Figure 1 (cartoon, one colour):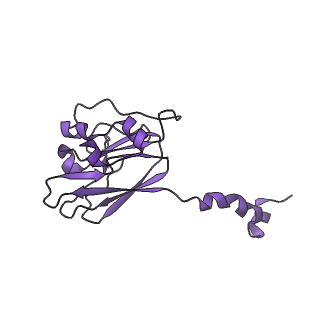
Figure 2: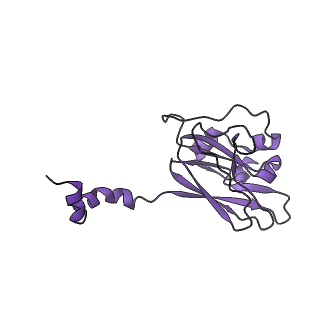
Figure 3: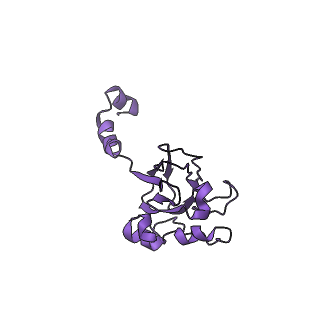
Length: 175
């Protein structure tokens, strides 16, 4: 009888062959840029809406030459904001990113994730990520509690339907 120890001692043999497909499968990365006009009169995330699969890495990068920004999940643990991410998902906060600095987060739980820029939420600098599809097991929709979000933020969010239909929504498409 061959045990795991025998297979490993022989250089992995069949075990290495079995594991290879998962080793070759690269984890998907999506870049979300934080942008702004040179004088700072307009700021945004690009894309503002994105559909991804569980396990996708989101790479936020500040491409605004004059402002610092954050990528902060709506969640009571972070600045006592309403929960607008799926139950069981970990909230995130990038802290302030200076121009050309970046931050990464991996989203695993299916559902809708809304996030914002701490200093620019009132100007509508928000984004929405949809992980999986509403038909998938464990999927969580958009939070209904919107009473303490700025009107500019609420107007800026693309709909879940539009995100699922287009996969990626750039800010110009929502204005």
